[in-house]
Length: 85
Image 1 (cartoon, rainbow, N blue to C red):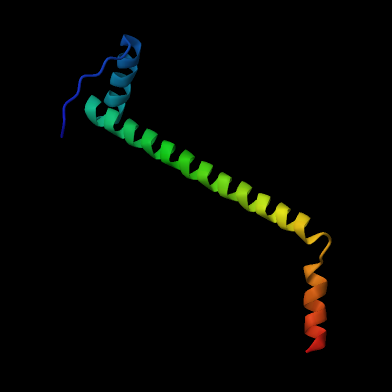
Image 2 (cartoon, rainbow, N blue to C red; image 1 turned 180 degrees about the horizontal axis):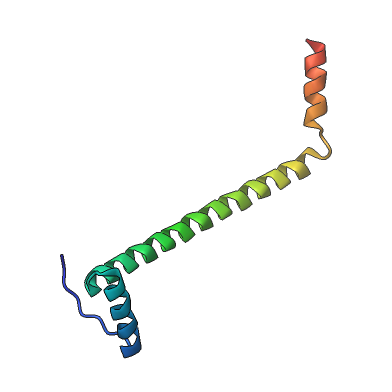
């Protein structure tokens, strides 16, 4: 494990100490847990952003296909194909 120096406001340190005392864990462990929670949240937001971009791209492709097909009705075409069999 690596040691680092951290500068925080005195009020934040007091809050950190209250939480670490109530959780019965050290400051260091509390900060490590907080960093882990933060990292997971950043990763979740990045994944959500990627998902949203993929959905927007799929919608754009669908809209372009709709414009390109100019009223072509896939359901009707499938029905015609089934009836012709």
